Image 1: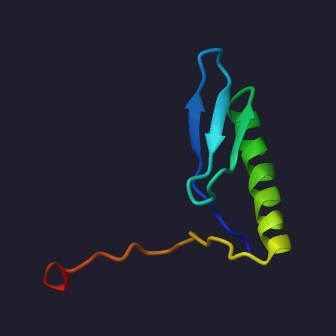
Image 2: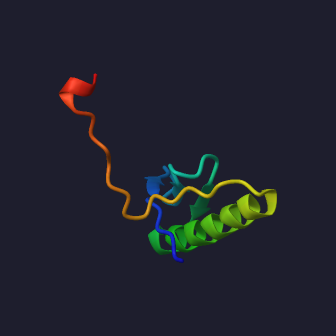
Image 3: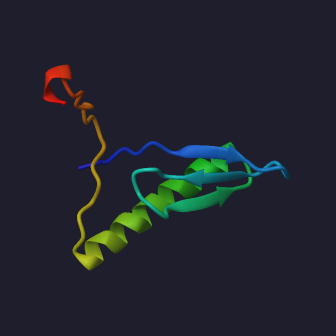
Length: 75
C-alpha cells in the first residue's frame, strides 16, 4: 500500500528549501532546490515510517481521508 503525504516547502534566504511533513511530527528535511527537496522528503518519509514500524507505532494514513465536518446540532 502506498501512502501519500502533504509536504510543505519553505524557501530559505540562501535559495534552498526546508521541507516538513505535517502528518509526521518532526519529519523535516532540506534540499538545494525544489526537485532535490521533494526527493529528500520522499526519503525522509520512508525512513520515518520505517522507524515507526520498528517501534511498533501506528502509521498516519492521510491518503484520501475525507474530513469529517461537525454538524451544527452536534456541538
